[in-house]
Structure formats: structure tokens, C-alpha cells
Length: 114
Image (cartoon, rainbow, N blue to C red; front, side, top):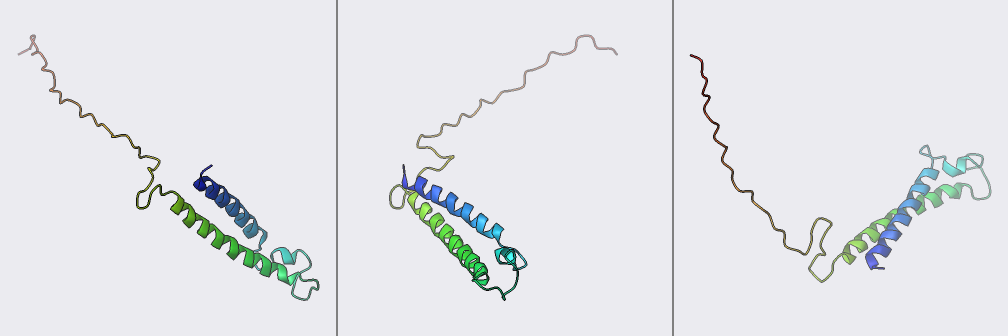
């Protein structure tokens, strides 16, 4: 298994976790903490749930960015030489130019009416 494949798997996992963390949050600021009874008067650290979700969102987003940048580095085969892409190959491409064809001459109409 190549290093790029490992980075790709990690990127997919982190992206999935980032989606889950974002979907748990409420856009109005309530989020998971509002389902436990509301405002900042709650005891037991429910207010800290919003802080945890906010910090985990930033952490996962930063980790995703770092993994993407590191995966880009692993694509390189040799220093300064990029690996062939999806549409590129190591084989030379031969292009065939079609021979120019002259339009066939049509025979003259023999029964012309005048």
C-alpha cells in the first residue's frame, strides 16, 4: 500500500468526521447543548459542549488541510518530477492525421431539360 493511499484513507475519515461534527451543531448556537435543557444556567458542563464542538471543527478542518497538503507531496515520484496524472501516460502518443480526401466528381446529368 502506497503512502498516498494511506493519506487518501485518512482524508476520507477526517472529512466524514468533520461532516458529522458540523451536522451536530445548531446554526442558532444551541446545538447539542440546547437538547439538554437550554442556556448557560445548566450545571454539569453542558455549556462546554459547544466549546468542544467548535474546537473539534477547527481541529478537524486544520487536520484535513494538512493531510491534503501532505498527500500532494507524496504524489511526487522523484524530486522535481511529477508522477503521471490520470490522463497522462509514459508511452508516446501517436496522432494520425487523416489523408486529405478530394470530393468525388459527380457525373454530369445527361437528361437535362431545356
